[in-house]
Structure formats: C-alpha cells, structure tokens
Length: 325
Image (cartoon, rainbow, N blue to C red):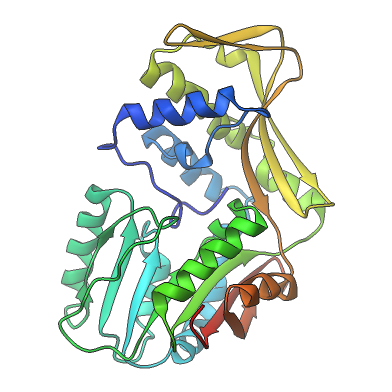
C-alpha cells in the first residue's frame, strides 16, 4: 500500500464505466488482477487512515519523522526559486513541512486525479501561503502532462513524490515514470522521493497483514466496490486477504484468494474461481538506496543526497536531472 497522500486517488466524479472496464479487463486476464488505484473510495480511504495508525504500519510515521528532522536540508538541497510539483496531494502534511523550508519558492503545483480534492487543497494553501502561486493540475501522474506556467519566472522545477507509491510499479514501469519526471522537470530539475527499504520479511508481512485485520478489510473493499457500484453478484466472504513477501523480487505481493468453488457475475459475464485461486491487487517493491539509484540513473536522474530513519526502514532521496533524456 502506498501512503494515501500520494496515491492515485479515487475521483467520485469519474464514470462508473471506467471502473467497470478496469474490473472486467482484470478479471478476464491471466493471472487475474484488480488495479490498486481503485482501493481509495470513501470507505477504502477511511480504512487506510486506520491502517496508518497501526503499530505494525511503520511507513507513514517513519517518513514523516524523516521529513520533520531533515526538511531544512531537503529545502536547501532543492534550491532557491523552485516550482514544486507534487505527485498526489493528500493531506498536505508533508507538503507543508517542505514548503516551510524552501528558499523563495515561486509556485506549487499539486497533481491529482480528483478535481474536487485539488480545489480544496488549492483553496487552503492559497490562504496559508499567499506568497506562493498555487497551480493545481487535474491529471493522472502516470501519464504525461504539461507543467502550468507561473506568473513569475522560476529557476527550475522539482517533483515531490513522497509516500513510497513508486513501489507499486514494476521496476521497468518505475523507470518509465522516473524518465517522465526527468523530461517534465528538464535540465537542472530535481526529484525528492520516498522509498520503502528492504528489511526483515516479518516486519513487512505484519505491515501488510495486521493482526487486527484492518488491512484485510481494506483489500476486500475492492469486492465491496464491485458489488455495490457494478451491481455484481459476488460473495465477499468467499475470499480472503493474502499478503506475502517475495524475497527473489524484493516485494510484498497482495492478493484476494478464493476459499471455494464460486463465481463473480458482472453484467451477465461469469468469472469462475476454484479454491486457492488468486486475484492480484497490489505489489509493493522494497529497495536498497543503491538499487533504486540504479533504476533512477537509467531514467536520467543522479542521486544527490539521501536521508533515512535510525532503523533504516525508509528513505527520502533527492535526485538531480543533469541532461535531457
């Protein structure tokens, strides 16, 4: 799971048809899958807020602690006169920590799929940061988009991408996204990004399968959405949450596993399941700093500085874009 402050947020104004297409495409595939971007409807977001408060789920509080301690260094590293572009704009807690430490920032451009959420973020930040031009961008950051044009000149653009959302992407897709960031920022630009570090599998598995079962509810919420929004015939109790660490690929793998012979029926189309059959819902890749730096280098980004917590659970990294890619 990514931190919802940077997830591809559910847009209540988006058509049910888009959700339907994603679900049908995923269930028709082999292996079967459902996109993790659909976790965050209203119920899913509320469940994730509960997950973030669990002792086992270290990611959000650890990244926040890193930023509270090192935000002045991060601001200095990013440099003066920047236009800051944030991929996903959640609760803005981390954003404020960074904005407070930037040197003469020109503009802040939150990028989010939800127009309603963007409007709220822009309104609040314009009130609290009157010297910074707030330029919201309604877009899916996994696709290319154009930077807005501030009224004042800026020295360079920098992307802020906290929350370890990059871990949801396969390494090749992560490299492509980083290359898009490099092109977006251009020569002299930069990237400040959060990554979850590889660690003891027991710690990881507890973070993604807590004893209280909140994470299980969060994953199973995808089936609630399918039943409620697509008027599907699905036995939610016939599935269970599965989270396991794949040591070979250094990632958590999240599934919904069928407990019996059953079927999901959507618009008259039947998808049959046997006991033990899986629906993949999420990957969360874990990195070493050196390993992630190699992926970023292939995208045209050079590691400049890194910050970690005392346990080495999480890292925030600053990259510079040195040449056009």
